[in-house]
Amino acid sequence: MRRSPLYLVLDLETLTDPELKDQETDKQNKPRFPSPPCHQIICAGYAFLEDHRVKDWDVLTDSEPEILDKLTSTIREQRPILVTMNGRGFDLPVIASRCVRHAIPHPWYYGSKNARYRYAQTHHLDLQDYLCDHGASPRASLDVWARLIGWPGKQGESGAQIPEMLERGGIQLVAHYCLSDIVQTTAVLLRTDLVRGVLDEPEYQGAAEDLLETCEKDERTAGLAAKVDRKRFLLPEPWDQEEVRQ
Image 1 (cartoon, rainbow, N blue to C red):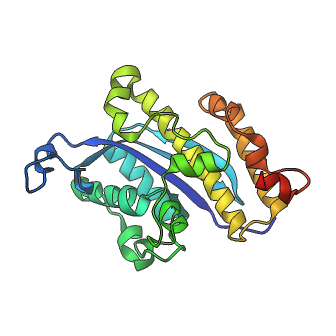
Image 2 (tube, rainbow, N blue to C red):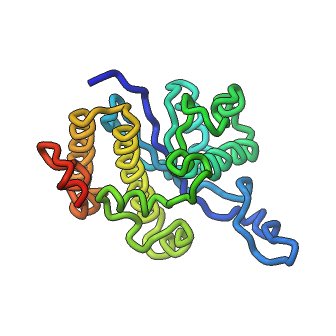
């Protein structure tokens, strides 16, 4: 396999900061989606990929300052390419804003324009923005992209239901939801790198099989792996274009 970049797949789950929730209204005094500073981070899911194979994944559920300190120090030291789904519009600005809140240095984000430049992929690859040609076509959600390649998608859940999840199952339920997003974003990344020529077909199939095996071995994601359309995700063997088109 060709040597590929170190990827860090990242996803946040948040609640509205109770100190700022009254500030988030429009000119008609109607509620609007909170701006980045108003999102309080309650957990952060991540997966490290080396050569497109998962080396580590987990969900940070510490206090917000501890989560931010771990994320920013890891990014600063490891220099991975961050991979997100709508991270340019949400996750990265939220991290930066909450670093302002807690006075946590984040030089990776502000030290180079490539971390925030929409068309650069050396620091951050926002799959949602990339796959819609940077706004040239309508955006599709993680749920749509995941189901397109054979994964089960969100299964009726969304980030808007985080308060309900907390009441129903506590932070661990939210963490499991977050890890599901991490896994499926990783799956979309693998298929994207196949389509754009970063991986050839055998390399893709090897990485995809490895991802499924990792999911099956982790009790938090085994149920998700069981719902995957393996033939669609792994591709027919041997390669059969007619079968793929069906």
